Length: 292
Ligand code: EPU
Image (cartoon, helix red, strand yellow):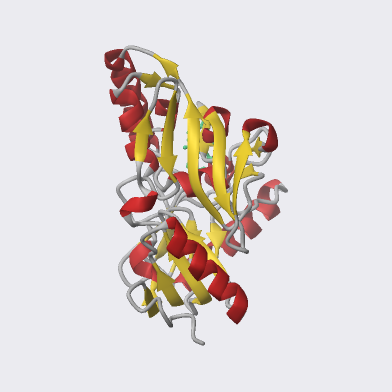
């Protein structure tokens, strides 16, 4: 049985992933699916297990660089309504794994729930944000997370309580296949005060990062106590380019790609930056973006 049998409506073959990633680079997914319900997702995951087809989850595509060869197996996107629900309850906000972090933040702010607004400007989905504990200098998403519902590679669903989860710098213990839903424990605050705070943070972030460009998030993790952007800048690498990819002039920890760039350009530039920073400053940088 093919993995498409019975899933003809939702599984497409040979789909370019460049359309779904912020860098707009990279080759196709062998299969790409957007299931319409948790049950259907579970069935599909079980089918892949039976057929020994690998499965990956694609969130907002803002922290991913897909190689030019593309990826084998199935790529799942939680872009259907069943995975994007956002509910504001008494002291918590509950959001589907496919909900955009930005939408969750604005819902929380509108309803006067404080905490998540510190994450304004971070792209991607709730699932992606939790998977790598997205954050910035003002904090990270893990600190607000009260519980999460996940699906394993066997298609089983589990609830993870706060005590069962741990979050570190750009990493979390939530390493199951799918993050279906998460609940955030937030404090009540005046929506107007919150809106002002969020707008202020947005302006600061916009001034510091090339948000409007064709780029993903920060390319490298900050080495303990240092800023990767500052190190790359100090190595004189701003504006360095390979093919159609360039180290951003605005913030050195971003790579901007222009029309016609390839993933091979981005990977070669990443290597070059790593080598130069190691040679000039003796620091080994580690990538934060996931390379598929
Ligand atoms: N700096 C430079 N040159 C540059 C970039 C930065 O000299 O090209 C200097 C700045 O002037 C500042 C210092 O480096 O003194 C730190 O810069 P910034 O405040 O921009 O913070 P960062 O450490 O570069 C981190 C996160 C960002 C997050 C910002 C703001 C990482 C790898 N980066 O950046 O997260 O948005 O703080 O909270 O943790 C991401 O993870 O994708 C990301 C973009």
